[in-house]
Length: 166
Image (cartoon, rainbow, N blue to C red; front, side):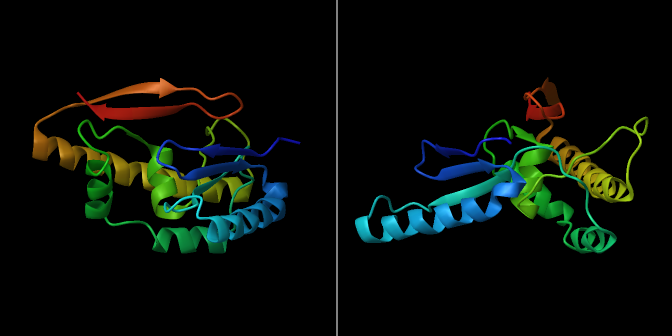
């Protein structure tokens, strides 16, 4: 079992990483923390800005896939979000996914056996990736700056790219 991690970020917000099987415990902790904050005025910033899942997803159902596809952001919204990151617009696909969907989607190689649930999740991941690619093209056209990227690695997680304007 993976442990739950609570981080207090420099801006005063709290980030919680948890194992999916511990969601009830995490939600109870958030409620208790909010109650303490309400009575003791610990901070004026939002208590929780992100709840993220540790480990790999088991996929999504056909219905969830359709729901996520309906919620795909418009290209202009993705462009605005990336530009809101500031000067060099540094971002990852996971930043975009968490901003618009409050979760991460994972892709699996075509060389690996995938369940139907994993195929559904892969499809949503690819759609978001393609939208992100088009958004970077729009920003390049607008700014005349080219994108640079590097691979990032986190233990136990798939590798991913981080992009920024050079």
